[in-house]
Image (cartoon, rainbow, N blue to C red; front, side):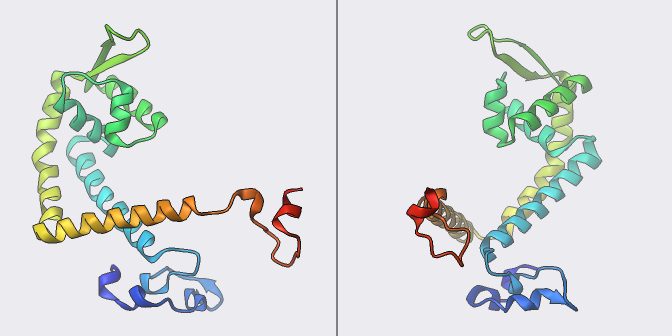
Length: 200
């Protein structure tokens, strides 16, 4: 399924025409990633999406909650209370998405909130008894999946994998930093206008 099963994608790309079947687009294989896309980015995205779908299906079947709600349960199980901002940072979810999940979980009786004593604008969220029970029910089920994922690599391989992820992140960040300003990009390659002329 992934790149390791077809090492050609790590050393070269096929012609973009290989993405076509009778002139129509077909499913993208990692050995056929077109120009303008990153083999590593596509592979990581697919793996991330697959792993999230496995956890999402598990918590949905076992506890009738979504992935965002599960992450909130995990976070609130670690502390007595947490603000919405802290939960956004912990779950790495968008503010609007997390707000909807918090409302749904309050309606379900999984969590509750109270005003912060130090910040009138903030509310402190915490698990209810039902929320703690749901977390304790789901935890061993999800742990079986996460343990199996981590066990796929040896400790040394996990270290190497995380180091490679950091290298890819740094490379992407550096590439974006080195991009020219939007005003300096000539979107008309047939034009002979200089970047200065394009800006004017």
